[in-house]
Structure formats: C-alpha cells, structure tokens
Length: 242
Image 1 (cartoon, helix red, strand yellow):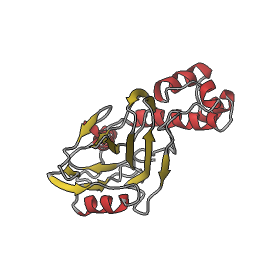
Image 2 (image 1 turned 60 degrees about the vertical axis):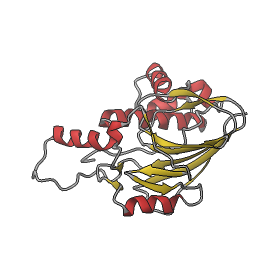
Image 3 (image 1 turned 120 degrees about the vertical axis):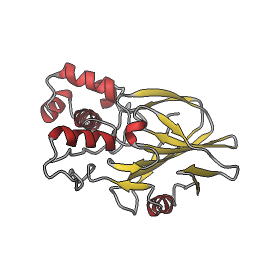
Image 4 (image 1 turned 135 degrees about the vertical axis):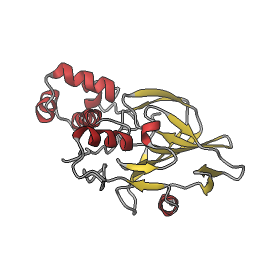
C-alpha cells in the first residue's frame, strides 16, 4: 500500500512555513522524493526510537527505503526561511541529524526544544522565531533584497546573496519549479503538448528529461496517477528584482 500523506497549512507567517505533513508506513516501501527548493524538518518514530533532522533543498529526484511501522512528521519551511545554525546552502542534497535527549526533546542551536506534533507546529515555530533562530529573508517570496551598505549592488552580488540564503541558483530554482508545475499539469490531465506550450519547454524530449531528473516520473506515469509521494503543492519563487 502506497504512503498516504496528510498535509495542512499553518496559522503563522506564510513566509516562514509552507506546509505541515505526516504519514505512516505500514510495510517496507521505497519512497520517491522530488527535487525541491525548500528545506524540511523531519521527525520520525519507530519501535520506540525518535529521530529528528533537516532535509535540505534537493537538486534532483531521489529514492530511499522506508522502514515499516514508522510515523513521519514534516515541516516544510517557506522559500527563503533561514534556520540560523543550519543555512540551506550547507545542506543542499543532504541531511543533518539533530541530537535528541532521553526525554525526547530536540537540540537546536545549543538548546533543547519540545518536539512538535502535527497539531501544534505553530507553537514550536514561534518559539524558534522568538529565540531568533528562525528568520525569514526578503530574498525569498517577496523577491526583494534586504537593505545593504551598497547603494547599487551588482547582479553578481545579488546572485551570491540569493544562493547564500536559498542554497540554489536562480536558474536551478526556475528549473525545479517548472518541472514540478509540469508534473501537476500532467497529473491534472493536460497532455504533454499543452505542458510544453504553457511552460516553454523546447519539445517533448526536453520535458521528459526534466521530469526524470527533477520529479522521478515520466509524463505517462504522471498522467496515470503515479505521483512521487512528496510532490505536493509546489510554488514558484521570484528572484531578486522580479
């Protein structure tokens, strides 16, 4: 039986958290994770063992085994959100485990925090924000640049700041967003010709290459309903000056 994800929005600043999700594996499975521009805090519980860590932005689709009897909780942070001890640029295509105390608290920034549940993520996020560990950068959703000493920063300087905050280049963000938008259109019944025309792919071959690289599925699989388990509600992200 495929993993079934439950997800919801939040009642806090949408520039900090995009979605909250949870799932449970009843049997041993393999999960496909699409490329993504945002980072997640992921908590898992299995056989009395509690794990917590950050999954960074990913530049291509990947697969991983999922052990049976495991409960997962994920917080998908918004594009441009920054957890100061662990900038996104340091965890692209990677995972950073957090220490967990014997009482099940998560150690972040040298302090222990009560682990969130699906229903109280807002409280957890606000506490990180109040401690100045979790902040947002205007290089994210607003598409603006924070005030800087230079009156007129160069394009290269803006690109460097963008990558420092997000971990990705503007080109990579556009490619990942476009591939996930294509997957959503195919899932919703649009044929490949319509997707190519709408999103500006050169031809079917270029669309197919992007889907395999970033989504891990072919156009035919997506139209048949074979979606990667973590590809839900992707957004597009403007770059500086857009």
